[in-house]
Image 1 (cartoon, one colour):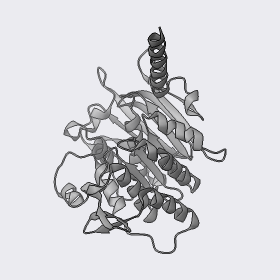
Image 2 (image 1 turned 180 degrees about the vertical axis):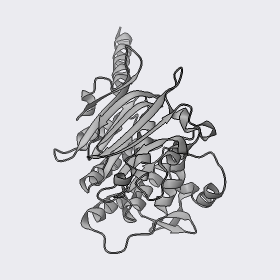
Image 3 (image 1 turned 90 degrees about the vertical axis):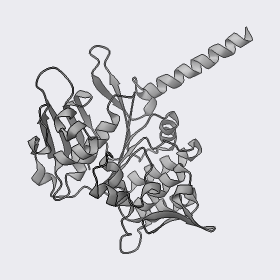
Length: 338
């Protein structure tokens, strides 16, 4: 699993050095503080463990800089500059660096590739936009045409279309699948690249389902086909997007179950209820860490603080926003009484 990420002059970051938790890592922060970029860099590093994967090219396909110039991922400033991205797995380190004048992936310098790729990191990135309902034909279109889609969309479909693993399900995976089947009231099936929810009423195509059901159905597929197993890494950008808040307890419970069976989880969220559900459902045996990305009042650079509980973070924009709402409600109530 990933144990550390270190960045220098990469996109929004001047410098960032984060030690990662082997369980669930939750990133919060205002827009523009680099949460999604941090997840994408970690995902690119995991994908670089695959044989034949060009790390620099993967970064370009995930971030889509203008004209595919990797140098545009360097933090903007006057003069020449160089970005550095490091991902660690205990003692193994994968490092990429490139200049703001670099125009192609081959101009990036990558070190540590050989020991890094000795052991594959199975990884999944779930983007904000749900993709299963758009599956038919998308992969062939993406493979043959230059369309402006970040590669996370094609990657997640590749994972979803995988057939199930051979052999019997182990107890832990069976328990996770059972929880998900209760939540979506059925199982996910596939026919001609089209996904369906199969229940007692028959097969219902994904285009007719609520997006929240599609998201949980995607998790069912990833567990059922063996993509999410012990030692894999799940990246999820804004899991709460288009999800009924009533489903949050189920979602958080599934994430906790996944980390209990050995899946490392990195999520970025803007939602108070997600944080609260994690605080309420986490047990003493779970490994959950919260990180707040914020801009320093002195120089405006992005910094990071971490804590074992979400509301111990001093620079949480989510806690601050809800505290302000509460204060305004009290003020309005008092004004009404007056």
